[in-house]
Length: 342
Image (cartoon, rainbow, N blue to C red; front, side, top):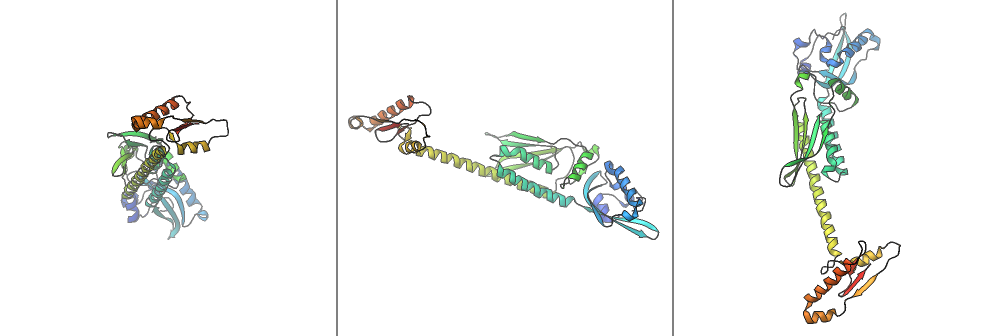
């Protein structure tokens, strides 16, 4: 670039990176490679650069710079400026290093780490859903997203949704400069922003679709292979979380059922001696009473009419005692013909 900001030469790598041909660039102002919203500021910066040779940076890199492609998209880049002289002319060699691939990889790693942390802190997919949508949708630079859960009998129902506020290109560029995670490609030409883009991937658990995550955006863009692979990995990760939570829930329910069985007298359905002793040991320090009751002549009833008749009598005694109690009282069968009330 000469001292008036005109491009004198562009190598093949820069042409491939920006989608321009040499005729587009050679002889044009360097601002052709600067996003439209930043061109005025860049002109001021360039004039200050050329007017004060003693203060020119040499070989330094300006982070979070953005370069405009021929199709109107922009990409983040490092820019190294190297002033030099060619004969009597002052020139500047500008080295452009694209950060798209590196920043995309950093964003994807950060997204996967954050997803892992969200899942580790959540009790269910419904609880984790809003945060998952925000993290994944923001990383993908999408405008909205939905979590759809499978429902009994088939079909999907929206569990939660997420929406990012619509921002213009200038605001988007400003946000890129503030954050290390830059977008891979942002469309600058608003005429291209009417084609909607949808990215969706399933959450599989035990080979079945447990949910779908779907994101939408008006900005056209491709989905790179590494991004597709990351989304598959996240889908598998969430699927394993769902499978683990289902197994834990089933285990908790089984434990609760077993505990209930272990505390219940199978004949009468009320508490048994073991559970009564446990409850008696945990009575708070306040006034309480214990009622002990015997069923008289149960042996004679069994001998004359059979054990089935004796069982009927015991169940009748149990139901009578339960009906006479308040909600916080406890009745238990503590022996063959013995009942206790706490």
